[in-house]
Amino acid sequence: MTNRPIILGIVGDSAAGKTTLTKGIAQVLGPEDVTVICTDDYHRYDRQQRAELGISALHPDCNYLDIIQQHLGLLRTGQSILKPIYNHSTGMFDPPEYIKPRKFVIVEGLLGYSTRGARECYDVKVYLAPPESLRTQWKINRDTYKRGYNKEQVLEQLRKRESDSEQFIRPQRKFSDIVTSFYPPEDASQQSDLLLNVKLVLRPTIPHPDLAEIINPSSTHLSSAIRLELDRDMGKPVDVLEIDGHATSEQVSELERMLCNEVPFLGKFCSLEGNQDIGKVIGTTGETLQSYPLAMTQLLITYHMLKAANIHQLDDLALSL
Image 1 (cartoon, rainbow, N blue to C red):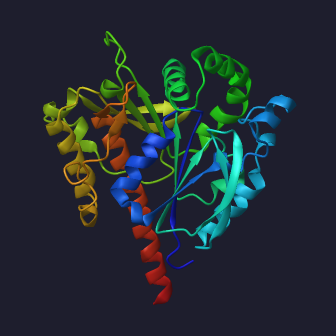
Image 2: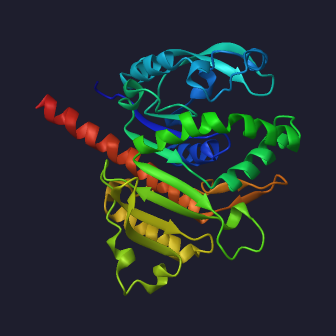
Image 3: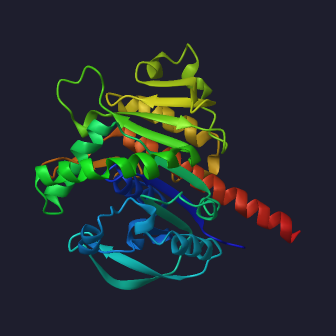
């Protein structure tokens, strides 16, 4: 197990923002140190076969969950895999790819937490839960812009998949350490991915950074746009961190300082200034936008991956003494 990779899971429904979140985290960690796996590649049937069988890609029976679990187990011990590749453009399968895990592995997709064996392979588990109205708009934008569908086709696909989303995708939320929900502010005159707020449900399943200064009355420069509260999620106590889309660079820098001061040796990673490519969102017309809530979400998740790596190294050191 020495020097095994640290594995992050990012699970959510179709067009929930998994790939956008993944790209920024990989950028912070360094692309040369990150292997990205998409569990959607493990579909059992191609697009035409799914249509003939009347089964959606969200259904467990349409995916090789046993092979996902097997491959995660191999990656966790530092072994290579021969990963299938599903081509979203053609709806068919391309030749498999030989994957050797790097220091960090990010596994994103629809059904990553579906089996207990798979869940046990992750060091950090994230679930994306945007409001359905926002996810619908994201899916329309993506599938019409990148995958050749028209709006009516996308809406019909969403309608047909809704029962599978409810039965198989959303229940995976309960297995996550962090639930991430980007949402538009109530006073938004028009929807903009640049100005979305984010709500982060921090479950006590992993140790989160000490962000108590946020709730300190003297921190008024933060409280106008960044809040930390105690709440309950699925009946259990949690911390909830919210960052508004109108947060200033100064406010975000202060939150960044809190995050990095707790674990000083992570400083080289914890910098918006040093990671200009994080927090980037591609707008509906193809323009690149900077979202501070997205950037801070990516930094928080990176913090957890690096902390998990440090804990693993300490464990290895203790075993060697």
